[in-house]
Image (cartoon, rainbow, N blue to C red; front, side, top):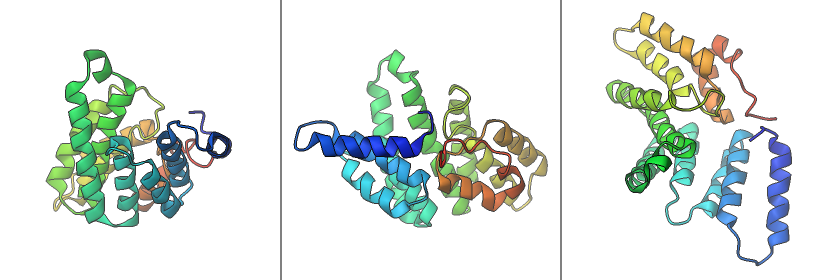
Length: 213
């Protein structure tokens, strides 16, 4: 939570050693370790850990695996994992109480799937679909507190979509880049690399405290 990833990694690995054969939620530990490896840019190790964390189609892990495949350029596999995970996340949302629906964790799950699918559609040049689902992501993002990891990234990708249209909409793109600069906080190295690739000047001004600390 504080962004001290090396210390977190050491603590999680120690917990696995100390647990031995006792019954505890190993999947959550492997999922956290996978996110740390992904943040460090070690996609192969992240996938290995996410596979260990994948139990009963956990929607959070499916999202993370989809994001790694997206970063690796395996768009077909990325879309498969993201769509499966979104279905599970939506099913969980339908069964949730009003309090659970407005919880930060539920909002972030719904937001991340739409942001990542928008990123995917951008790479596939499915611009209308990208704009539609990124709009959904941004509406959810407005309910998420400033400073959360991943916040603002949907605006970054939406800006790039506007620039990529057959007739680029520079005015709307500039507005979204403004939101991206104000709120954008990449969660992983792959997300930050994406912004470096499409707007290197803005990337130097982003809050990257969630990566490498």
